[in-house]
Amino acid sequence: MPDKLEALLERLKAHQRILILAMAEHDGLPAQSAIRQVAELENVIAAVEAVTAEEADRIKRP
Image 1 (cartoon, one colour):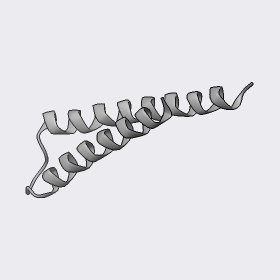
Image 2: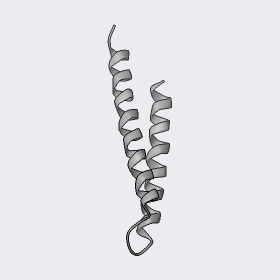
Image 3: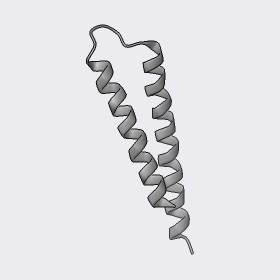
Image 4: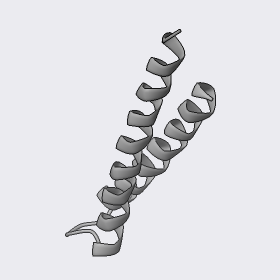
């Protein structure tokens, strides 16, 4: 399971990075929908990182 979580985490981070770089290409403020997507991805990334850490702890315990 940790490998699948790590793969998911990498996909989420890559997608977030693509969105941020696309927003940087335009002058002015990004659309609220784009900002919302980045923020939502950040929340999901944090949740996946937390579950990954929990799984790692669970595996270490006898």
